Length: 265
Image (cartoon, rainbow, N blue to C red):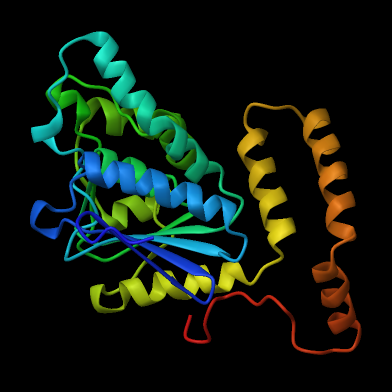
């Protein structure tokens, strides 16, 4: 599961780390990287031994967006097909029933920002910078950002970030709700891995059911969500994880899942 040219994938103790691996180009997405991401996401989806995913960039940047040199689109059909080729793995990653943590250092521009927004949580270094610069080049946000960004920061702020194409730093992104934590650069990737391992220790059934319900909640209504809750909870009650967690609670034994992710938080 490793493409040393564009994407490095490492799986250690159930955590898959996907490292965008074009540091000299600030990890700009080219065709080879997109193809490698597609293949890796599909493999992760089918491998239940993988309990969590970390997204990161090699070097000092997360991702500067799409590689401009590869954006020679001749007509509307070719442009649509280019984007449609992305959408399968974009949707799969967004809907993955396991925790995904993005570790953002340096720039997360354009499709890089969009890719980070597919994660459940973003942790960032103080030097992280986020931007939706699409309007500057006559394009619209892609890689799912028109779905994810309003859900993360709210519609008013999403409009501002998209229409102005202005850059925001890590602290402003945290205040908007896009970033969970700001961590010194030398600890950033360790912290992302720590969070992924912690979340990966939760019940895979309960986590997956909760994540899917949250994805449906904004476009749904109370009655539909209560029915989804009843069905999901009925499944969760029967899992071995739940039964073991209850046993430990009754016997005052150490819990199976503990947040925060480390005693240093």
